[in-house]
Image (cartoon, rainbow over all chains, first blue to last red; front, top):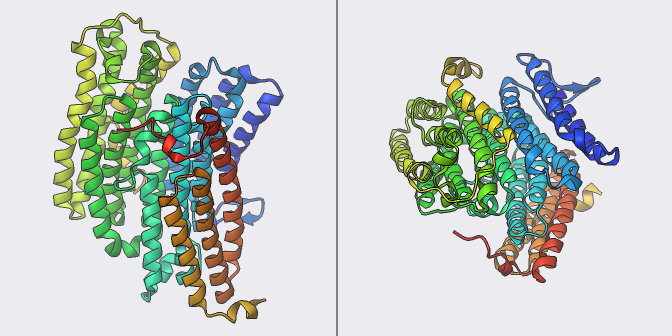
Length: 463
Length: 106
């Protein structure tokens, strides 16, 4: 709870920094602040006293269990990396930097709420804090029609999905008489579940599947990712996806587990469709942001396997997978932003001959691509391994085989970028290297390899 | 207050708000003007408000009514952001028709 409180204060500080004329100090201050918040967050590990402000107990609203703390830690680390990138990315836009940073900190606040909610009201508020901030950020290049379009599409579809979320919550409330997760669990366990409740669960699930961009609710994601500024795309495809997944997982592990038999067929179909549509559509893309959007959809499918296995505590597998995916994607975006800026293009051919111009960057991009493709010895491989073995333990053998076949298809489009870097002739545009991007990429590469050295530790933390 | 609400059977509220919700969905799916779509989304949210208030009144549990305030606040924030985005599109494209949103495809 203190994590959320401090993060909100940090967001407010960013807004004030504009008034106090502290723009120069802003990014270091935010990074320092987030590091301190990370420490505070981790200190709560294992403490089971209910959250409270003063003497007011908040346990009906939020519950900082280990699940929430682990995901909050991951989210804060991702945000720190993104803020390091922001230092150079917004170098030419100093007038608005405090607005951008404060809104991005508020996105993190929304994510923190989504990790720790213990009440449907908090789920709704978390999703909305995160989404409304993102609508603004996606449309933040005001004079670029593509950014406008991206923000508007995200807004219209996101608000539409919120309607379904709310109707679902209202029906669940009508049937069970409570918004609290424990109360709803008790209601399901009591056995007399009204048809209205099932309708509510279905609508709620639709809205959540929209937020994680699962097929058939994925149409917004490639458009929004392509049109939004690259840094925001990085933010959306890592932090936001992790937050949406953690919220969906928490929903099933803490609350709707008893209705799993009812939603299972639907979830299986959605998972299969998400994996194949994401991978197959990515094959024909030429815009790198779009490729990553479709790859994000495919990864959402793999993570849905983890949600399907939520009854046997697959939290660690989902956490490991989310961490491996998010870290590789942040690193990839760090170098991709640099390449985009040097070539004034966001297509695959911007990477042509990168290996000759900057061998280090090319090698790092290859590491991230191979990790995302799930090739050993990188973290992405172990993440897939854990998710798949968890799914097989729960009896989803056919679905897992299907996922494995699809992850082989995925290698094709990841290799497309690697081939462009290593075997295409270089163009004459020089590669402008900025140290912050390289530092972030190197940290992410180290983490991508480092995660494979301590998998047991990470796999045990959420047991 | 509660008696007046309960003079109407609860199912009627359910039917009415479901109808309003469906009208909202249809509006979002079939209208082309971004402002009308926004109004239809508001209609969806308000049908949820009605539903929550009626459930709350019938079960004698005030949680639902508090939730309505959350929805109102969020809807207001959403409208503010949505209209701002619409303004910036209108400045660039001189239209609020969502068919101008066709730069990003495949």
